[in-house]
Amino acid sequence: MVAMAKDISYDTETTGLYLHGPHEMFSYSTCGWDGEIDICRLDGSKKRQVANNSKLDEMFTWKPQFSSPVVMHNSKFDLTATEKHLGRHVAEDVEFHDTYMQSHILQSNHPSHRLKDLAWELAGIPKDDESAVKSFVAEGGNYSNVPEQLMDEYQRWDAERTMLLHRFLYPKIQASAAFSEIYQMELDLVKTTMRMEERGLMLNVPRTEKMIYKLEQDVEGVLDKIEEFAGERVNPNKTSQLAWLLFDKAKLPILERTAKSKQPKMDKNVIAQLRESNPHAVLDNILQFRSWSRGSTMLQSYLDYADGEGIIHPDIRTCGAKTSRQSSSRPNLQNVQKEGVLLNPYPIPARQCFRPRPGYVNFHLDYSGIELRLLVDYAGEDKLRKIIINGGDPHEPASLVFFRDRFKNARGDLRATLRGASKNMNFAIPYGAAAYKVALGLGMPFEMGKERFEDYRAQFPGLCGLNPRMAALVREQGYVETKFGRWLWVPRNKSYMGTNYLIQGTAAGILKRAQIKVHSYLQRATSGEVRMLLPIHDELVFEFPRKRLGEAGHIFREVRRIMIDFPMFDVPLEVDVQVATFDWSAKKMFNILV
Image 1 (cartoon, rainbow, N blue to C red):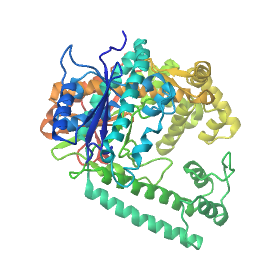
Image 2 (tube, one colour):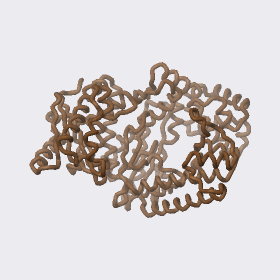
Image 3 (cartoon, rainbow, N blue to C red):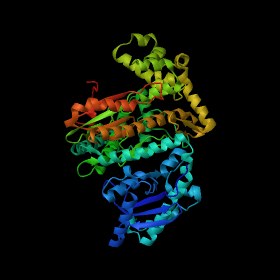
Image 4 (cartoon, rainbow, N blue to C red):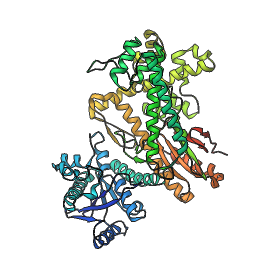
């Protein structure tokens, strides 16, 4: 089957990018399969507004056998703009396509999936058509201020670009059953994501403001301590001043240098190593400054994007990374810090800023150990598979290999420390860590670490061989393929990243499909009263009305079943369920079996 000739491309123009805030749609353009273009202003004369609104309403009113599938580039944005303008939902009631998704599926490693870049590459359509309109928006204006003649020409190009891309890319999607399934999944996820964005999540505004104030005071206090040591005010954000402070004033050793400029490295990993081998108060001051100043900026972004009721409507990007993982912006909610981070001993308890709406609680469903489960599955490591199935500790065998009788006899904190080091190696080795890194990570002399690494390789050949196998595939074909059939292209000169792409891409495929199925179930079972609010890596955040808490066990048993129902994996998935009644940092385990 090929794309039908009645498909029509559609591109919106808005006064800005924040559609859950003040920005509005003021015009749209369409292009038919035959190249016929129409520009429709929604401002201007009353007569034009009425006519173009009527066309828009007709386009997004589904009528079997009469409606034209609508083609967009970044459909979530255009559909959100359209819904806001029409004052009703349309995404669930119209057949649509998305050339951004088509591009991402076919060429995940492309340097840009922007409409202009793709059309220039495909057909040589110039990318400078925006230059003529930019002068009209340079000083606080927006595209609605651009003279219509100029704006019409600008809109014409985007409608034509979108149709051109669709005609070229869509047949390639249709040629593969796997790509077609992935494409339909991504389109369904757009609709699910729009409902999450629309609902949004609640910020505890007073608490966030207090935390920002305290962080700003703490940052000034740290700068005072650094000044007391250094004898002068130092700006740790300036590389030259930080290098002088660490290596000239504090006399700390230079552990690493950059490849090109040969300047000393001072990133978080280097600071952590220095702090371990050469304890010095100034190192703690630097970590405090970095964490607290960045934390203050992060929390301020939450306030900036909260509406008058304290609700944040983030932009959840359904294909935010080359591995196809989701991301979010305005603000970034994929990095809401937890307390107790290994490389940051001074984390910001940002999860305290988020609270349930009045009359609701939040549930957090997190895939339990999904990364290791997928590594074991792809590696075909039967011994660890059986341990996971039987509910055992998959990191204990590695602990016995690396630490032997020391681990057997260890108790309490020592046992937890040895297990933690072994757990880190259980992840590091499948991603390509060699004997030297294993010895370093275990705190052993190289010869001992090498011996233990060889013992581990003998017991777990699958995990040790996974990265070489994926790297060889990347060098041969340029991509890895998930069990869902998604091709994730990896630079051949970075073939060692093949396993990382495979695991991240597979986890993304699981979470995306789970969101779609869970959203559909909640609509049927609760009439939409229980909602998903946000995906955070391998976690889903839900909003649950207090008046229905008696049903929570039943509902989340089914949600869990949906989230782990992926029979193509030999290693079973599992989900942890937690509930937050006050804020996200105060989550408690929730037993769904009672």
